Image (cartoon, rainbow, N blue to C red; front, side, top):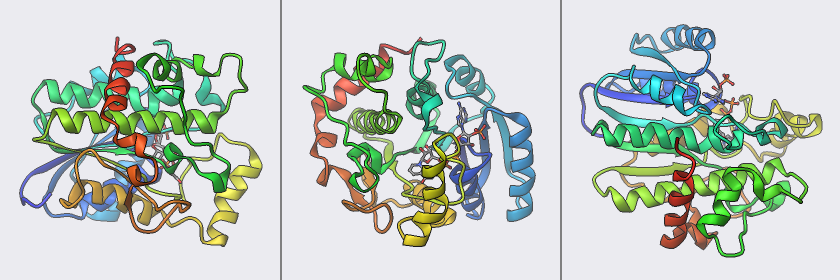
Length: 306
Ligand SMILES: NC(=O)c1ccc[n+]([C@@H]2O[C@H](COP(=O)([O-])OP(=O)(O)OC[C@H]3O[C@@H](n4cnc5c(N)ncnc54)[C@H](OP(=O)(O)O)[C@@H]3O)[C@@H](O)[C@H]2O)c1
């Protein structure tokens, strides 16, 4: 984002964790004139807004109530966003056993939150001609597997539309042991494929998927088992495997502001790493750059748009 004047950003899940720090960092840029905090809970958003105003000295934050796991709520929220959106940061996400449950749309909560609601939001802006320069999706190294954390790489027999649809409606785990880490990695994988599909369809915008990397100071692990929570909060920082909140958030901010990042690419840490420089994940997991898989992801997703 190099132009100067009156830029608007929308950030989902902006009341805490990485999303809130993305809002803080963007607000410190003079070109930002308005930042929508798209959150499902108005009280939490109101508290975050006051804290962000105090931290930045800027009074440019607006609240939009939006539950990204509910397509109707996303559409209702969209109607409360005025004018063009120069930067959309699709940050809201969940992981954990509860996220395996199905929403009223018949979609796993992990998929609905991390991906489907964002599809409704981004495609709604595109349909209105209101998406400006760039959309950034929060990815995760889980999308290409994390052997260090025993998170399997998503792998499919043919990566067909039908097969990817089983991830979205949760039937992938019928007859198998549910694995919420894998379901999370699959959702982030399909999200990155969809963003790459959009990049091919809309060369006039930038679609960047970026993982914040292993980031401390967030609530991401609140729904997972206690030993894993302890590992995320204490062991990983002590071992130097994770980085601080502002470093993880800056990766998403770079997705917005760094014109050298290429549209359609999924950027995250180098192989076997969870922090450090951003690299193109297709160099680690070539399926991400397969246009047929990207098309299948888009088709599978659209079976579930109501
Ligand atoms: N932290 C990491 O190490 C890490 C690593 C890789 C990727 N990521 C990704 O980074 C993003 C941010 O994660 P985080 O670590 O900052 O997690 P976090 O602290 O749990 O924050 C998640 C945010 O998403 C919001 N959210 C959850 N479900 C929502 C819904 N249905 N509608 C609207 N907002 C919703 C939460 O709101 P509530 O307060 O209302 O729950 C919260 O504001 C996620 O996409 C995550 O997958 C994080």
